[in-house]
Length: 161
Image 1 (cartoon, one colour):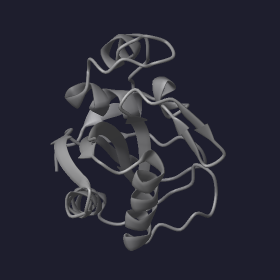
Image 2: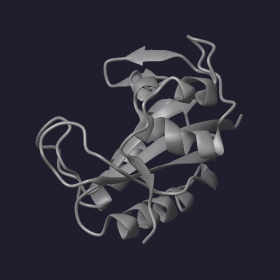
Image 3: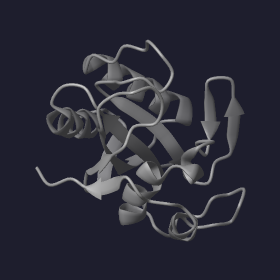
């Protein structure tokens, strides 16, 4: 059975626009995954230590893979684009986060669904609202659009190359 999943994409090292486009292509070429929607890119202020601004966006996937297999593919694609994990919230060439997998609730040491911090991050919800405004959080019942109305979206600007 196929499920719709959402991922967040971010980059602030190297040619971020090219890296994010490459990541979308890599996702589209992954067996068991079909990219069905992508958001526009947004320039966003970083969270964490001093570092360059990010480019962020979201994509929707149709997949027959289970959530852990999707996560494994996301980690593989991050590595393909030179991701090195040095410090929490530090700069990165590519960051891919699994936000939701249908309405699945999962709490494993290495994977929590829905993503536990997505509802507090305008840099995730702004692009997610472009492609999945009516997705309803299984814990809170709020849609992406409803939650976004409650957030301060300052620092999340459309990216115009």
